[in-house]
Every structure is written in structure tokens, then in C-alpha cells.
Image 1 (cartoon, rainbow, N blue to C red):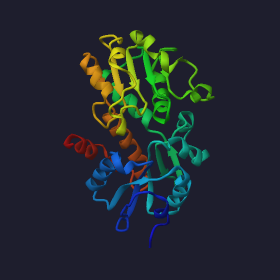
Image 2 (tube, helix red, strand yellow):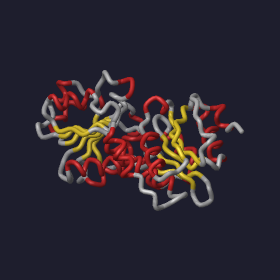
Image 3 (cartoon, rainbow, N blue to C red):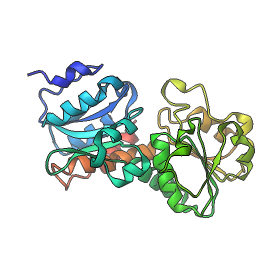
Image 4 (cartoon, rainbow, N blue to C red):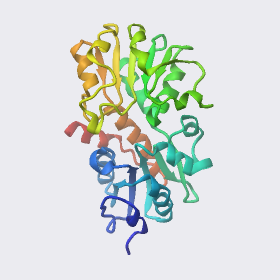
Length: 298
């Protein structure tokens, strides 16, 4: 029997012969999402007849698709990607974790004991762990985050916890977050057009915008002249993982700055999200080894 949600998505998927399936929902995850590769490697490692499939959906059909997926008992949950992390949070309402409510974005949905979708956000924790694993503690550093979308809010939430008061600077093209009741109180807001004026004081620069991702690989949130303003010991962190080296990171490398991309963050958020989703089936499954092997082979 044809799944009802098939009529409301923009891509073709094959799930008929699967025991269960997970999803990654976004505008067009079928084009570039890495999560299906990672999740499917873990499913294979445990000999599960499961798969993660991409769901391309327009905003107008998003809630219909979510509702129909919740009704489909073969769907165990999955990942939420751009640009719907906030939309799915609103749809879940009180079924979202407190962390996700504070961040105002969801990147993972999973079934609770009653079989109803709940949601959380694993982006922020993954971003922090990936950074600290490579560069260690940074409590006395000045950090500037560019972007306050779903991923940006997650990164802000976790990095704020690690920093002394007012050592985190935020700049964003979208100023709506400025008026949010959930915005952190101990950060310094910087106008997007004036961000270059404080770069010489910044120790860690984090790009959480989509500039440089997917079809925007030829643009960067900072030009070469801006990058040169950073301290020579500064670190540039771009949470984008595709491409592995954005134009921003290439410019930073050219100027002999330390860099880190979003690959490790993407891996770790997938590990955490997988555990949330698959724990309803088997709490003993640990996907990290299989996922890391896939990353190394690419």
C-alpha cells in the first residue's frame, strides 16, 4: 500500500521493503545531506533492515508530512535540517525538550513510549564537543558567532555556558533574534555591517550562517581583508561541512590561521540524534564506530 505522505513530498524514496525507516526532513536534503550515509552505515553494521531516507518538502506541506509520518508506525523519527528547524519546533509544541525550546530549533525527532514524536536539538552539544576535542578549553577567549538561525542558536546556547560574561559576540543578518525573550543576556550584539570593526579583538570566529554552503560556495561572510584583521593565533570555525573547506576557511588558511570545519560537529550530532531515535528500538546500539569509518572512507 502506498504511503500517504508520498503525495506531499518532492522526491522519490523506496521504503516498501524496509522493516522500519528514519527520515531527514528539509527543503531538499536529497541533494546534499550526509546524515543518510552515516545512519545507514550504522544500520548496516547492526544488520538492521532499516534506512534513513531524505524527505524534500515545501513549507506548505510540512505539517501534513509530519503528521502522516507520525501515523506511519514504520517511521521511527529522524533528523530535521534547514530551513525547518524552527517550524518543527512550533509543530511539536510541548513535546519539544526544554533545551530545544531555549534554542528555538529542533534537529531531531523521535518516538516516546506512547509512540508520539518528541524533539530535541543535538547541534549545540556537538559543536562544542568537536571544538574542545581539537582546541581544548577557551573560557578566557573572545568568541564571535556569525548567524542566529537554528544552528546558530544551538551553538550560542552551548558556547555561552563556557564563556565568562560578555565574552561572546553575536552578529546576524536577521535581527529578529535581537527581540527574542530567549536570547542570552550576557552577549554583545554587533551590527552585521560593522562586524569587521571588532575582528582584531576576536580569538574564535564561528560561522553559523549558510553562506558558503551548497549553492553558495563562491561567497563568504568575510572577505580576505576582514580575515587579515584577526589575530594570528585566532581560530576560524565554520560549521559547514559541505564543502569541507569553504571559501571562508580557505581564506583563513591562506592567512595562516587555525581552522576547523563542521565535519566533526555533523558526525557527533548524527551520533547523538541516532541514539535518541534508535533507543526506542534498542538502547545498546552505538553508531559512532560505523559512522567514523564512513567519514574516513570519504
